[in-house]
Length: 191
Image 1 (tube, rainbow, N blue to C red):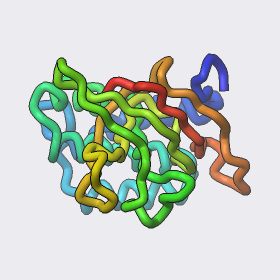
Image 2: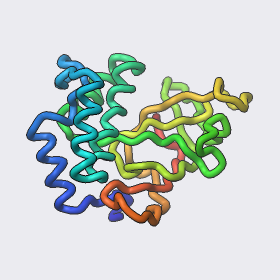
Image 3: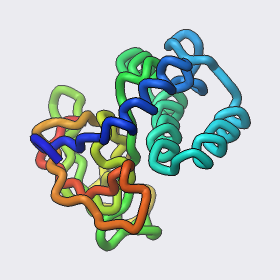
């Protein structure tokens, strides 16, 4: 970690650049955003092939599925902002779902999302065991309805890495070190 950013090894950076040159980083994104519009079946085949070579690279490559979620559910301005970046391989993605008391039981998510007068949201709380937690673009699960305690009060938010997100630590793992698993603290993060 340097300046609150995860620094990838040179071989890992070289592999990601090779995938970009092969135009595979946006393989499932629609052509109008710069992607190849390949079916999910082909994407899964690519994930399996890359997994055989290196699981760390597969974790980073596979998390471009974040772009698929943005394409399926975000409004057009967010699609225009993020999807060309994913298709060009200029950003990486991560899903920030789990917390200390909400691993597989996501209904217990405590991270707060508070609406702002300008229509944006602010996120506050901790996320734990986030695969590729040093990514540029994060999809974050947070409680958008404070008076609820079940899954109906949760929403998925898009935010970018920056000074309001602190990488508190990297998890010590037995393998797949090239894809960092992080604990993230969100401090009034715009989303």
